[in-house]
Image 1 (cartoon, rainbow, N blue to C red):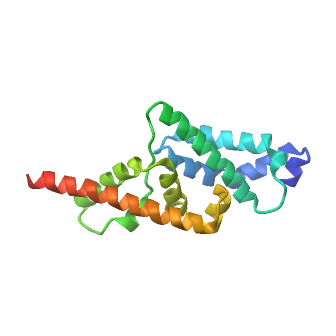
Image 2: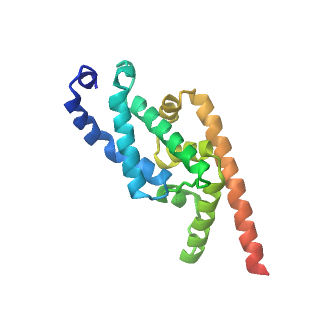
Image 3: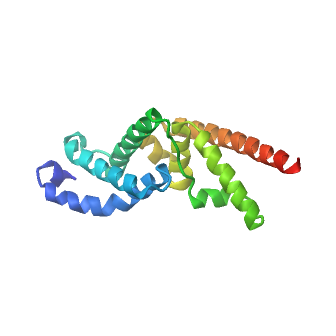
Length: 182
């Protein structure tokens, strides 16, 4: 990155190749599997990296600085989506597997659908913290650096987001169960 800062912008290709898939998969989940939008958002991130390269001081981790830009691009995208009344996130397979019990396949599909609905009902910040911590498997310290907050704050936000997700999920499941009984 120091070479990019010093004007060797062709070196940006190395950083792009190193981080593009990680950034892409993050956006793929954020956009509910929209490949085109995910690719556009990846390009937006690396455009901003190039544009704001002088703001990287060289102190700290480049990946944390990069993912702060990723976070900001996701926020911008979400705001645009909210303005058009479309705001949704997709829960990754790893998180679904850890939350849903090992029951029959039909029941799993029903629970996955309920979990997706529950994720969509969360606030953007709640979805994001769950995606970063439980799907992307980032450490609390990394999330704190990315979000510009403390590790303790991230732990609290994660606990609250997961508690709220569980509450919403249980309401949806209870309503489904009551509907099946009647």
